[in-house]
Amino acid sequence: MEKLRFAIVGVGMMGREHIRNLKLHPEAQIVALQDPVADSLERGVRQLGSPVATFSTIGPLIAEARPDAVLVVSPNHTHREVLEPLFEAGLHILCEKPLCTTLEDARWAADRAKAHTGVFWTGMEYRFMPPVGRFMEAVQGGEIGRLVQLSIREHRFPFLVKVGDWNRFSRNTGGTMVEKCCHFFDLMRAIVGSEPVRVYCSGAMDVNHLDERYGGETPDIIDNSFTVIDFENGVRAMLDLNMFAEGSEEQEALTAVGDTAKLEAFIPSGDLVHSPRVPLGQPKRPVRTHVAVDPAILEAGTHHGATYFQIAAFIDAVRGRGPVQVTADDGLRAVAMGVAAETSAREHRVVTLAELGF
Image (cartoon, rainbow, N blue to C red; front, side, top):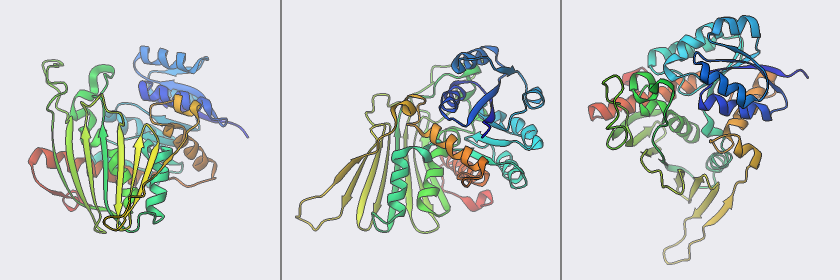
């Protein structure tokens, strides 16, 4: 079987993570890198470890490198501009989250994807973390009974420095609740198996970036928040985000509480704890298990192996061996939830998805 010819658009930190993971897949061949920043291209070539065609713009990449598939890992606000020629060329596309930074552009991308002849996949690595995958299987398989409440906690480090400091401003990222949290909103939809109805978010920029100035401007991105979401099927979900908690032992925790048990998953330890309900006064019976990941896959990225497993699933979809697991519509709806949360935090009110046309 001939290898799939991959091009990567955007060779920053996440682009280089994709390079490391594509190198691990026996069916993938990287034939081109594109980035308008020469230093980023040089770093990408060093990461690849072998000569490769490099481009500063998209058009020549398509015409000269002739890739089968393209990974879009460019800054959020460039996604629509990047996607337009890729759609026209009929290429297979994996577009990193968020799909786009605005609802208008995300709707455009979802509409184009419906008529697209190639595979279109929205990059949502968190679905593909092995402990998270096991957590989802357990909840959906009835191991906690009927799901009532779902909560996700991310206590982590601040946003890293990016080329041109583009991620310091909501106009480029869509806002923290779109840029960062669309991962978690996507997970909520996938786990709950229902659509969101209303969102309330209390959040602000209280600690990070307060003393930073870029061209005289102060960053405007949320660094901590609580978000509560009501779903159509009655399940309630909550996201607890803090981005000045560098010392946390566990960066992420997922908790699902059903009518018969509670289930927790922790990242990066990879541990799951299943705690069935017991009569008052009886001993508790929690069971802890560990979800192991190949060390080589763990070392290839910062997403607990998820980047590799998502790439493998994307290749399966391109080869016709499996479905598209994260569609453009999934990407659109995650953006909509993020936009609702940003609006709620800014206007201090509940925002319904109906207001946004969903």
